[in-house]
Each structure stands twice: as C-alpha cells, then as structure tokens.
Image 1 (cartoon, helix red, strand yellow):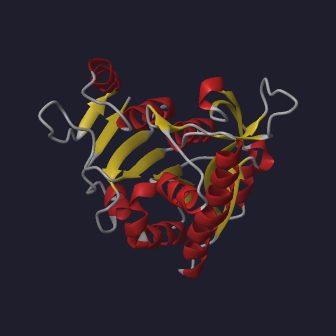
Image 2: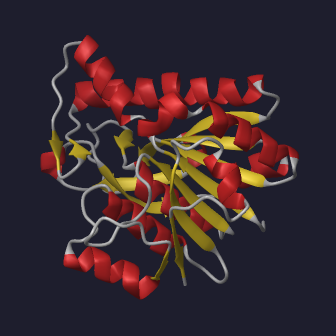
Length: 260
C-alpha cells in the first residue's frame, strides 16, 4: 500500500485532542490512508493510583509487574483506545480500535527482567492494518504487544511496550509516506532551546549522541529515523496547537521535520 500516514498521539495532548480528531476525520474524508498509534501513560498512572497500585519509572519507562500489566492492558486497550475510536466515529469518520496483540500485529521479547513485563519489538505483522486500511477504516492502535519471543511458560502472553518505538516500527513495516508525532513540545530544540525546523539523519543522530536531545525526545527521534525510507517524511510537532495535523499536512505546522 502507498501513501500511508502514521500519526502518534501522545497521551500528554489528550486534553487538547478535539481538533486532532477533526483533522483525522477531515483527512480520511479527503481520501488519506491513516494509522493512529496512541499513548496514555498519564491515564494509566491515574488508574493505578485509584486502585492503590504503586508505580515507578526507570529512564522514562514504567516498571511493569503483573498487577501493573493488568491495569496497563485495561486502560490502554480498553478505556483510552475506545474513547479515541468513539470520538472519530462520532464525528463522521470510520475507525476500528485494536492493540498490538490483535492479529499478532506487534511481537516482542522482554527487554530487561528488572523492568518486568516491558518489551522490545521484534516483529511487526502489517496484515491487520492493511486489511483495515483497504476497508477504508482508520486503525487506532494501543501500544501493547504479544509476548511471543523467549517467553517462559508461566509469564503472561501480553507485554507492555513504549508507543514511540512501536510507531516507528509500524511506519517502517507499512512503508509509510509520512510519520507525524503529535507531542506537548514545540519540536526538537538545539542547545539554546530554539526549535530546529529541519534535521538530516546525521544531524538528528548527533543531537542524541551529544545529549542535546534527551529524555522522551530520544525514542521519538529514533522512531523517525527507523521510519525513513525513500522519499518519506517524518515530523515531530506541537499537538497542542489548534488543527496542528492539518497544518502539518499543508506544510504550515512548524515543529521539526527529519529527512533522509
């Protein structure tokens, strides 16, 4: 399939998602093929607190024991995913919600036993996404994975995965024309804090190596680099801005574009 647009909606912009939903529906009605991957870490944390389940992070990733995994699965594949799907369908779009477990879309192994049930992606099976796209639906993907590689018999079959690298792997597997990260920052910044409108692969790698790009920006940049093939375009933009997605498609979105 050609001309696929993969959009990552960060959980931090859920409170500002109204125009994002409008933009997705508008682009779909214009004939664009869209795949949406969403976050939701803040919603997971809220529900863990409600249920009295302690949580902690190591280098930006949630340590995921069995009780935490239950909540992550319920919140991401259930509440967050279905709210996004409902919002798209209510506004006249056509969307179907799935997780990385469905159709063995995302297959992973455990990253580090000390982190618990946190996975690293080994394989993407694009067939479920392609089937939905051919049927004119927007697949809305929750970042969970099938624990399919090197799994002990007594471990659960589902594993938690970071939505940013998942997005890059999906875009790469589909040969997506565009990958757009909607975040809560203005873009990738230089040492002085100024947004860098365009970055080559080499410049992006240098920013990560030098530590200028750090924290949660690293998996986003890495995902963009993973998705770059041929004439594809990857962008990290401020999803808090009104109609940021439409503006980006019209080359007026600001943020940072990473190119090959």
